[in-house]
Length: 328
Length: 289
Image (cartoon, rainbow over all chains, first blue to last red; front, side, top):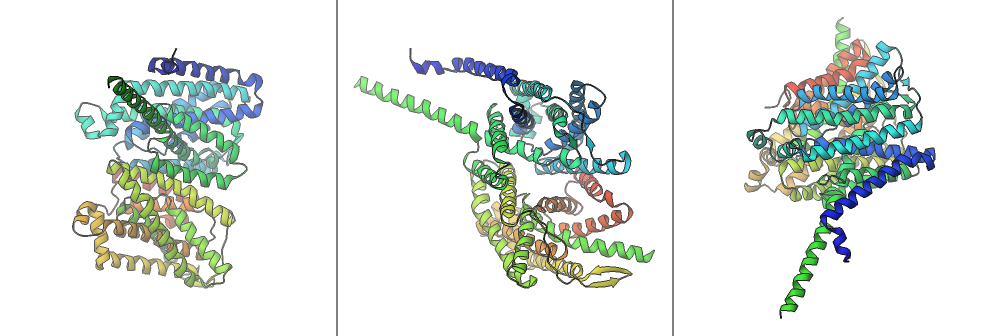
């Protein structure tokens, strides 16, 4: 049997499914043999995967660059902390998701008339506004700056994060393949043409924006216990807006798996290198980002695709030559 | 009563002058070179820290070190646009993609410049004594260096405006801002004018950094704060409008000073509220067309 036949598109799908199953089994059993350190590392990686994939869900196909990820993440942290003090963890996570859904609906309804760069600036402002607003509320109305978060076991946080991550990936996958996904791609291609073709552009944009915010909020709510203490500067950290964008660009937004590998690679290397060489790490990070934008517009996923295509072409080329030899 | 109003007005003007200068560079870079340079604050930080080094380590008089730092930043900006942003422009399939990619590249620049600064200067706050004597204006004490900063901001802003409206090079810049392709057809060298504007934006950032270093403490992490202020001012004055951001800076300074008198913790929320309202109701800003 020829090895090449193992990589036909159909077999590749089977491989992908088997690989995903293995990853899931690995994640499900991790607490049995991994120490608590590894659980924390994997939880952080999953968090970045959730943020990056949900950011790409909306901003990837439409081209509207949202910098509100940290805003929803932070709102999720605050809702999770407040709800989780009295009610079980899962309720807190759900509340974080629902709260961000509503917030994103409101924000989406007022902002999505804004095009291009104005949307990016507005979402950036939203993050700063929410953080300052909560700081003001804390100082003048709630009467305490910052608050302590209820405790939760690392395993519980980890398992909930796995569930959120799987839900994010499934949602992103199905949105990509649905009418909604096609509608968003047409908006990204040419918004006016899409509207003329009968796509209700506002509804499509607001809906996906709100759906993507659910996962950001839920991730924030479940990450809250591991922060132990929160204040507006911790919860609304701009890193959580920047990193998903960079990870998605690095991984490549053209393919479904691009943002996932981008997030996984970056959050892992960050965890390993950032404590020891914080400045060198971030410096290299910036340089790599610019190189990727310049030379690898499709990101890592684009590179993989290109290599595959090159292999297929060279194979066809060789076969053509062999046939020529046979004919002569 | 009159004394209070005077105090609020003067301190508003003092802050406003710096805001105006901080944002004019950003406005120029977006208005002509079409790069929303979110790393603008990092250039300001770089300008401030270079001045600090020249003053403290080499003992050069602050105004003289400005003559070294601002051209240096101009060079960096010019080269960055000539290499990085120009090749982004030639590679991208559509104008919208150029803006998006440039914004992403500017993100990368934030990380690069900030961490180079952190490696070089650490994260300590620095300042140097300069013109620290006090003048009494309308019953309130103001430090001389802040008044000098205001004067420099106004002179710099007006000079820059005259350069844009009266000189031949300025005319070329304004033409390129309106329509780069047609301007190119009319014999304007676009590959010279756009980097020039980006460089001038960095030059203005250097000037703003100088004013900040002389009147406040500066450190390697201050950049983002000024990027945000510049973004707000630029939205108030109209994205890409130079006089708009000059006046917008003073408007924001005075609003900040009024709110500060009434309730200091509300200054930033008030800025963001104005910013978000304006971007929703009138995204082209107060002076935009």
